[in-house]
Every structure is written in C-alpha cells, then in structure tokens.
Amino acid sequence: MILSINQPAYLPWLGYFERIARSDLHIVLDDVKIERNTKTSFTNRNKIRTTQDWSWLTVPVSRGETLEDEIIKNVKTDNIHWKKKHLRSLNQSYTRTPFYQEHQPWFEEFYAQQWTYLAPMLKASTENLLDTLGIKTPLLYSSEMNVGGHKSELVLNFCKEVGADTYVSGPFGRDYLDLESFSEENIDVEFSEYIHPEYKQYHGEFIPYMSIVDLIFNHGSESLNILMSD
Image (tube, rainbow, N blue to C red):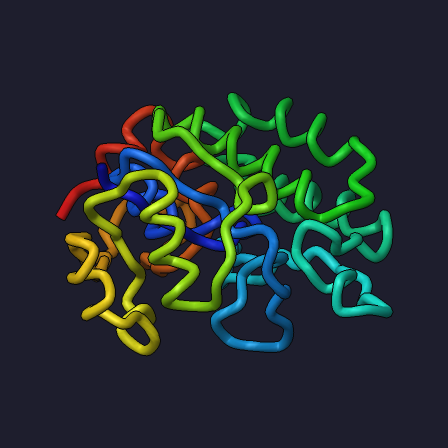
C-alpha cells in the first residue's frame, strides 16, 4: 500500500493533489504546530492568477497563547473580513474563465459559513477539491489517530500503523528521513519530484505554482488529466 502524508493547506497547489492521487491512502497531518512566516508554509495561504500577475489569498489566523493553541487543529481564524475579500478576488480573477461559473455557487456558500477554526475550513475546501478532481484516495486525520514520534520516526510509525509498504515523500523529506530505519521495516521511500505541467490560463503568459483552483477554473473536467501528465 502506498501512503502519503502532508499538512493541510489552503486551496493547495497541483503537486499537493498529485501526491494524493498517487497514493492508496493519505494522512492529513493536522496535530503539529502551524508554521508561520516561512516561504514554504501554505497552511493558511496560496496563490491565484490575476489579470496582471498573481497574488496571495491569506487566511488570517490568531496567535495562540499556549503551545497547544498553535497546533493546526486548534488554530483559530482571526477575523471575518477575509472571506468576502477572497471571494471578491476569485470573482475578479476568474469570472471569465471557462469553468468558474460552474463552481462559483459552492465557493459563495463556502465563504458564507462561519469558520472559527482553520482546520475544519481546510478539510471542507480540500475534500471538495478532491471530489471535483475525481480523486478517490481515502483520507485519515492524524489528530484522530494515536500515533507518536517526531519527524522521521513519526512518519515511520504512521506507515507501520496503516500497513504501508511504500511511502511517497515530498522532496524536503531528504533532509530528515532516516532511510535506513524504513529499509529495516521493508518500507520503500519514494521522493516526489513533481514536474509542473503548463496549461492555458485565461490571463496571458503562463505562471506556474498557482492554487489548484486556477487549473480547475480554466480546464474543468480535464484538470485531473493535466494534473497527472508528465
């Protein structure tokens, strides 16, 4: 069984979904500390294509008073104004794309809801995007599992818990995974080096590494084929 693990992310990029699609099971790592102010953190933000270039959509989150408050599943959103701003940004950027009108009602309903905590919002949006893409990989949430450890040990323990014989890691896994310990447990480790496809965007010259919504709004039901193309 092929397993992948990733922290939840807001309207993730294409590579996030490609790794899930390649897996037999995916674990959402929602019981670790949220990363703040780093270039590689996408837990509460992502990029969309605009008429001129690209821009961030960032969900403001409160800073916790305790370490427990900083665990992703416990992090609270900071105010209500971001929802109207994000919907307005999507409308302005994508209203003329071929498939935006098909998906707009869902996003209007999504942004109309009260999201006190970040994690349920990420779960709802990501599961909708998986369904839209037609990716059927089942998800487990680490906060609902009784698995301990840190970094490489934690990943290995997840693999053992679910009976995985292959773990698909992101490229940064090379920095911390103890490959010998996986080999001792007869678990293969593969590093995903996603080759980003180029596709037609409504606004001018192609810009990669946008949120998956950019692909969906431009290409609809063909999105998964484009996503998985080499």
